Amino acid sequence: MGTSTTTCAIAGAGPAGLMLGMLLARAGVNTVVLEKHSDFLRDFRGDTVHASTLRLMGELGLQEEFMKLAHQQIHRLQVVTDDGPFTLADFRRLPGKFKHITFLPQWDFLSFLAEEASRFPNFRLYRDSEVTGAIEENGRITGLRYRDATGEHELRADLTVAADGRRSALRQDAGLRPRVFGSGMDILWFQLSKKEGDPGGMVGRLSDGKLLVRIERQTHWQTAYTVRKGGYDEVKAHGLDRFRRTLAELTPFLADRVHEVRTWDDVKALDVQIDRLPRWWRPGLLCLGDAAHTMSPIMGVGINLAIQDAVAAANVLAGPLASGTVTDRHLARVQRRRTPPTVMTQRLQRFLQSRFLEPWVRGEGRSTTPVVLRILKRLPVLQAGPARTIGIGLRPEHPAPELR
Image 1: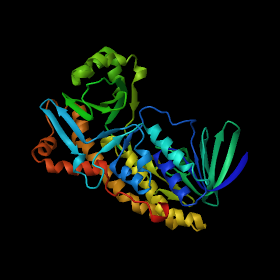
Image 2: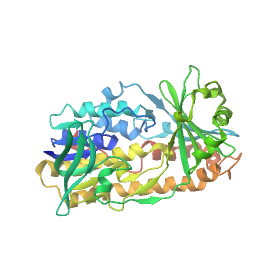
Image 3: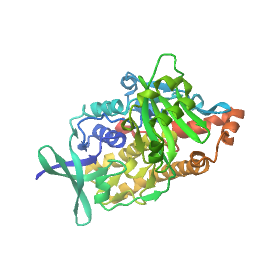
Image 4: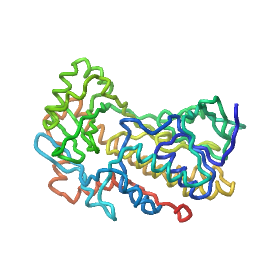
């Protein structure tokens, strides 16, 4: 078994892991990020780049290069019911320069972060390197174990970061167990082609106990259909033709494309889950992003929370890591900083799920428009509230001067 050392070892090259790795590298900290895949090309990953992240790119001097990536700008989030269209969030009401959110394939975003980080000689990205567990000595995590094409290895580090998602092997091996909050819904993801003249944007369709969300991409529609928890088997039992008819009824302009869902293999089921670690750290180990708190896809804010976690962690840890003085107090400080917005966001997601979405998919909201949508239409100024929660977040972070 080969052994190497670094200052900070990060498991997972997702938004949290690569953002933290890039920021630490900018601060002169020797950093290794490990990714179990050879590339970032995975379907149905969150593609939202929020206004707060766009602002962060500007603060880091990366905005000009970042905006060269192909993307769509979304200025409103709409919901269409049988009573017509309603605006849930108007991003044009956001404070600051960026009055929109952006949809960008996550693999392009991650590639951009990896390329920027690679400009610094103290950053390394190990691909095809699957983290299998933590190294523990005398009650402290002192690194991680990983497997690549050449075999098993150990990477020793002053700090190990678990940013390897909701099923984090590192978190599990370190004995950290999340508190799981119930969810009564799942989401079926699939793609349909986009044609010239299609109405653009991000739109939710509510009708007769059904919820469909379509999100505009460069060449296709990323589409989500909501079902009861564990309801995918029931949908499949009714047959693919019925599923296609339902899609055509909800969004008639896509009716000529529903045949693109050729088999059930074209439909991916997402197990909606909300959980949170009571404690995000152990001596020598810190969890961030989905490894610390899995968010519901409601409002599409999981990526934003992960990136804000990374910025907060870099602000607190960069100096102590560079000087070799990082302690448990620093790790606890990161959690104290990020717990309030995480808890408040999850409470809001759970409220929206239990009061609106889950009753709807159970058939209790048939052919009615939720009262909150009627209020927002009558008082458009209130559309700034959802826009700020989605586009900026409840505690946006800014990079410390030494990270810029």
